[in-house]
Picture 1 (cartoon, protein in one colour):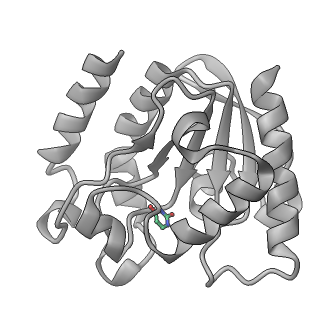
Picture 2 (spheres, protein in one colour):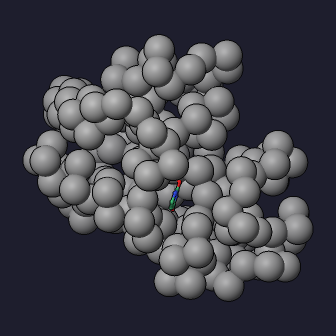
Length: 187
Ligand code: URA
């Protein structure tokens, strides 16, 4: 499996399907365990992620690490982490539809290879990519079935850890959602 993931990673690193490759420092492909049962999808790399080539290593990542620890989840062992787009959008703007489309096939191939028990849709961008017309506030913590290349997966939306996502009680809600996700991954 690793050899196929390395192949996709290399294709991402040389991808010119959208303009984001022109302004990136590093392609941010993934972090974590390729044998994990939980596949975690964020939005896009920020400044720190772009500089280090790893997802969720900046402020949002630090907050997420805390939530994971409180939920009893090991970032290194229990998660495979990636984003909807692999290159940083300038000024951390939201990725455009065309950029998400250009990256979508890479993401689907990652999911197929990892074959997780649960996909975590972290934040609105990940949610709307797979589940249309729903708000995180209505569906966070719920197990929603999604289909990717004719295979059905469990997907659970959660709030994005970014400090910009201001929701009262977000820490408690998200830690509870992560605990449910961990349980679901053990089934
Ligand atoms: N926010 C995301 O959605 N992804 C990252 O990798 C970092 C911050």
